[in-house]
Image (cartoon, rainbow, N blue to C red; front, side, top):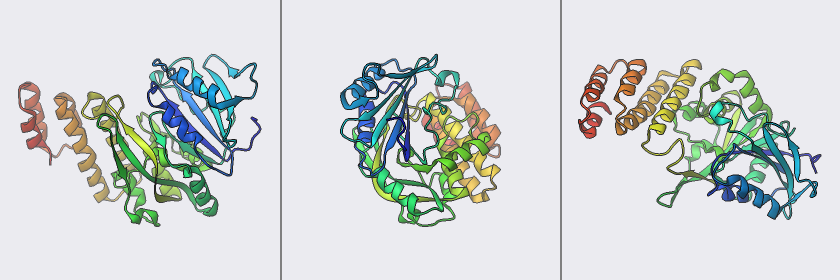
Length: 349
């Protein structure tokens, strides 16, 4: 079973997603392929019962290599399970239940692959997102197998707002399905919003990027944009305008609306995008676009949370030419009763 020659490795890191993880797992199992694929599922020491949900799913729908001892590996860091789906013979799960939370101590989980790091292609899906198209992997593999000069393919997706129940399709312009020299910059300006759960990438390129451009990932709360940027810069990427995945937005995530946590996430994203633009000599119009779009997003969220001290520091460092904006934030810091609408009107373009 473990000697199977896998063509795709699906990488799924999850933490405290017990309410959503079944959608993710079912999305993997529904894939119809003519090749075997392995799903590396890493639970980062969840405390909400997610581990039990994963194990119940495994025991119900999968066959273990050794039914008398279903644990295939255990050490100080994790317990690992390896199993094959009962009816979808091409679907295998490689599950790591971590014994302590790695995220809080900034310990990498990339080395947890069970020896399958050499698989030709990688796909991604976090524990609160999920796939809805059973041909997602097959169509993406078919494209990359037929086009050696491409190293990555992505698709359209749904953005699902958990609280309201709204599911909105995110479909890019047709120009993104063509060869487009501007795609490199479109990625870091946000004009081309790539859904991580829709991506399939060549593993050699993925590993090269993580090795040769490791500095671009330092202190980053997100690592996907850097990867897509370098894929487009070093080779070609393809967009397929088919809806294959759902990206879930809820109150608990880093991208939750109008929270202090979101402020720091947006600030970090701003620094990543601006850093890439500066380091790789983006045209001045691209830099301005990042300053305006992502800078305003940071400022807007900061105002919502009355983070005027942080906004003064942010503007002094990145937007020093706008003296009026800095002055308004300084005054707002001293006058906590000031109406946020006034601050917003005086500082946002």
